[in-house]
Image 1: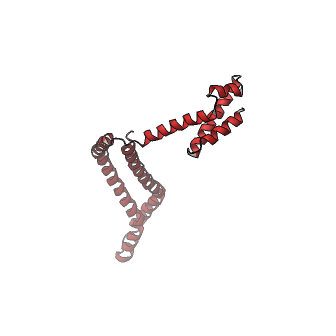
Image 2: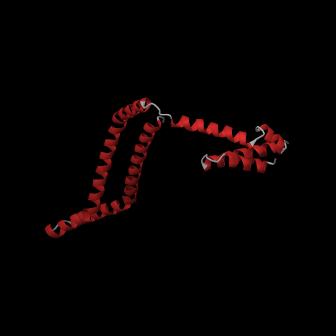
Image 3: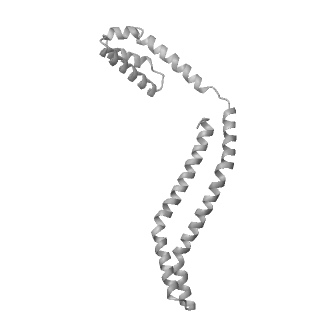
Length: 182
């Protein structure tokens, strides 16, 4: 029997397993045949090493896959996940929340300052028209507006990065709790 016929028979005997699994197995044995051929073995010798029959090999593979599937389906204890969740809660409360609140407050203050600088020309212009303010105030407000325009891209990307960082940190927390490992 040739390699091609053996692998074709093996593929037919593996019916019932998921298609991806069958493809992986066939690729693995194709690679095995290539290595053994490179070592100087004939197709017959390689097939003898594999047990001589594609049917027996397929039966063995199916039993292993069935045992592996049953092992994966066994319910696991939630004890470690609960302990990890409790530890993560304390870590977040003690280590993460304080600096997060401080940085959020600082970011919010900068955002308000940015907004005030952005609208300052309108406020000063209104004051200038209604109450007869000084031209110097109007020029300073235009300088603040220009500064706000210059840092707008940085503010926008900073907000975007902050939101993405928070999402990534929450996803990491979920992954740690569900998978039970860092």
